[in-house]
Structure formats: structure tokens, C-alpha cells
Image 1 (tube, rainbow, N blue to C red):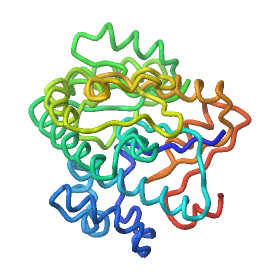
Image 2 (image 1 turned 135 degrees about the vertical axis):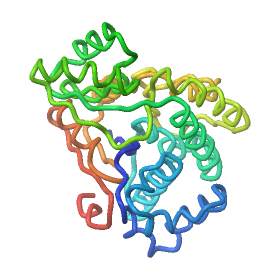
Image 3 (image 1 turned 120 degrees about the vertical axis):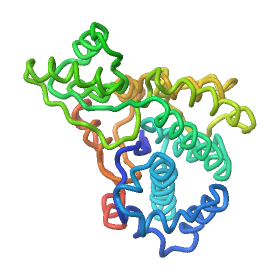
Image 4 (image 1 turned 135 degrees about the horizontal axis):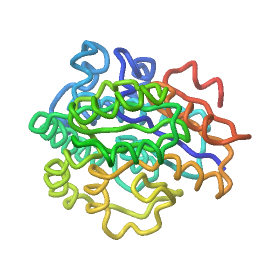
Length: 299
């Protein structure tokens, strides 16, 4: 069973996806996105400096665009898949790839999501860091005991958990994790995503999500919120709003896919973070990423 994986925020880099723009059919994905966003996505992908690209309102649509362009290119080469999963933002590429939403609606959703999360980040100062070499349960326990607000929000692998919270909260537990010989790496994101500091974004995004038509996907769809295959699609707006303030249970998702027979994982989009998480979590499977034309050689 083959799973298509889609990159999350933080994977962005200058020039990502440029390889794919030469194909008019693939380029049309970025052009459609530009029309919905009211901003030139191709310019964002090709000319925007890193600091500006890191802004949530730029990073989210840009990363989703690259993921979908990479997938479209692979499908044109004969790639097929049985299920989809995304990490945080990547779920939106997954929804579009699965046939749950149209391309236009994917960009409408990501426009609303990125703008709402950008606003929440500016109003509620927060930060995120990856904690490595410590069990997820220990990370969560330390965060729960902190004086200042911080929470375990991304369960990425048995040895990597991302925390989010106020700068004071993250700094407080970073000292503790450092004493425990953990490695703590600050992430290049603009806010405390998947934490309660995003509550206003969740509520604002919900209003747009309610206007979107969601269909039953054509392949298996795995959810960050449930940590497994999603089978009830009756209230996607509520689930996606909850997703903004809920932990990403990616390790659970990977194990659920593996138990269902998944043995091949292909990551589409910038970087190879998810490919690395697969390799750290599952044994005896194939995993690789496609972020440029060179990656197609692995198909």
C-alpha cells in the first residue's frame, strides 16, 4: 500500500518547487492559487527572500502549492497511491489529492487558515521548538508541570516531539530538557501552532470552512486530530477548526497506516522531514521525498 505524504510549515525555502513551473499543466496549480489569494504565488516561490517566505500568510499557500505541483508531476509519470496524510498544513494538500475538495477550495481554505493564524500569532506571541532524544510522554509531562504556558503539540516520532507556547513557557522547559540531555531546536514558524494560543484563529477559520463543500475521499485519508484513518466526513469544518488547536498525532498515524498494510511512503513538497520521521518510526518500509524533478527518479 502506497501513502502520499505532504509537508508542513517550517519546510519552506527560497526556490522550492521551481523545477515544476516549466510544465504549463503543473504551473496552472500556482496560477489558480494566485487568483484565489489575490497575490502572485509564482513570485512568492521564485523571488521572495527567506524572511518574508517564513511569514505564515506566504509559507502556508507556498508549501501547499509545491506539494500539489510535485504530486501532479509524479501522477503524470504514472504514480498512484492508496492513501494520503499530511503534517499540519499538509492535510490540506492531502484533502485535495484525495478528491475531498477542489483545488480552488483548497486555496480558499488555506487563504483563510493562513490569514487567521497570522493574525492570532501577532496577537498572541508564541513560539515552537522540537525536542529530541526524550520520550513523548516525558515531554508532555514536563510541559504540563510548567508555570508558564507550553504544551506538547506535534508527536512526530518516538524520539521527536514539538512543543509550543509562550516564549516564557518554551524557555522554561527548554532549560529542563537541556538538563535531561535532550536536544532542543527552535522552529522557523511565527506562532504557537496547534496550541490554545491559536483559539481565535480556529474560530475565525471555522466561518470560512463552513462554506466549503467536502466530499468523501477517493483514497484512505489519515487525520492528525484522531491519529488514524478518518472515516466520518460529516463535519469537516469542525474537525479542521479543532485541528488548529489540537496536537498533531503523526506517530499514531504512521503506525495506523503501517498496520493497514502501508509499506511505501512518498513525501511531496519542500524538504524531507516526513521521510525522516517515517524512517525513525517504521521498520522495513520504503520512504523517499519528491521536492524537485530529481526526486522523480525514485518512482
